[in-house]
Image 1 (cartoon, rainbow, N blue to C red):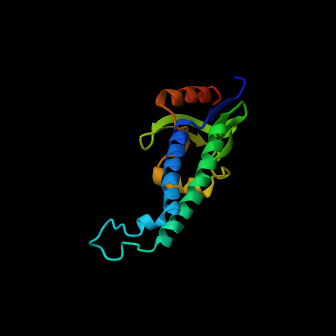
Image 2 (tube, rainbow, N blue to C red):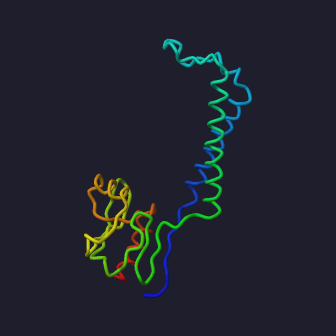
Length: 170
């Protein structure tokens, strides 16, 4: 089998994140623009100390939210322009964000499993002692009770298509 196969991040969730960030940024800008209009608002009057009478609090809150969600909007726009690669496969092996590049010679077997309502491709490695796994991925694997897996954030049919292409190499 010749050539390469890539799976990129979907754009629909990024669009939803972008819309949510714009809405929150608008509310935060309103906090900054008119902090006096919020200084006498008390959501829970029966709890003491929940009302912030100082308009400076709302200005600082708005400033922090504008800064954070402004950066989020910039990142989401960059991801819309150039989505990142989740999975890459060629004749030498495959690459994932969690495990890096895995050579086909080191893959012992493949199967498909459902993990937390998501279809993933599980693989086993021949040389487990020399197979390097990042710390974060090790912690996730402790709770998942599944060996090594490739998460593609796709439907079952799309994951099955990638699985069939991977089986041709193993």
